[in-house]
Length: 355
Image 1 (cartoon, rainbow, N blue to C red):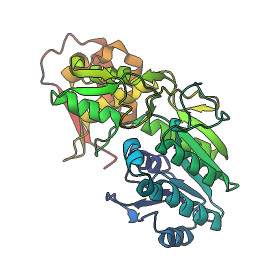
Image 2 (image 1 turned 135 degrees about the vertical axis):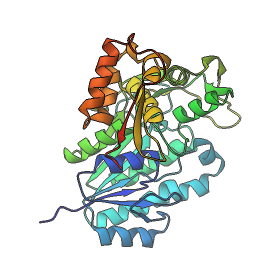
Image 3 (image 1 turned 90 degrees about the vertical axis):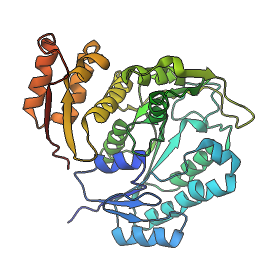
């Protein structure tokens, strides 16, 4: 019997894009809405009839809902409009998933807690203090109505993003342009690298798990510390980072949040450093115009200080060059003997096999 596909709804976003990639070994049906992504079908999850029609037609074994309105402030300002996407949309997806007996995977957030008693376990009672958190609690309740459901609570998702919307990309873009960047001084997050989050979701699905899981990075960080990590990785001016208390006049989500990971984490203790390091490599090596990876010796050795953590450095490299012994040998030789190759003239480039 042919295996039923995995349906990834919202495959053009940061999480959806990486989830789709993580299930690359299976038949994947992907959807898009505002943004176009290759090989995806258009779908508006607020259209219940269209959602049901697509799910029934594709008959997936797994439905992963990565589409959402993620902006906390907009949810507070426009609760009715955002609930149509964040609550009524998931309700339509859940009903469609139930019709084909599919596992439903939804993403939730640390905002389902009030921040007073963290770190939190999966069985800790929810107590949202803002509209975004209330919407996520509603989504969790919708998912739990299905016998086959997986609720993945995550926090502070970051990664290289063509839309430049996540926290890390915004820091990098502001500082690179010489603009000041304000971060909350009273928030902590369990920063989660998007490719690692996607891999953990895949492992949960393939392991047959159901229920609620905290799927996030292993380090609880103040937002200011994450901002400084990104600045240092890209050799940007940390003095442009300003830390201020959250503006309560805008939205009451200033309390600190920390998720205690009891069941699963997405990598090891180097995950945040690894994720930011890989973002550097993506910026340095992946040419959007030609899909060619290029190595510049000075960028590796000087500006980004990879010598300080060679294990993370080499792990990062292998994600790009697992089919290229030539480059890996080049990098190892460079780490061992950097002094024989001064200047800015040594490059290695080859066609990216992912093209």
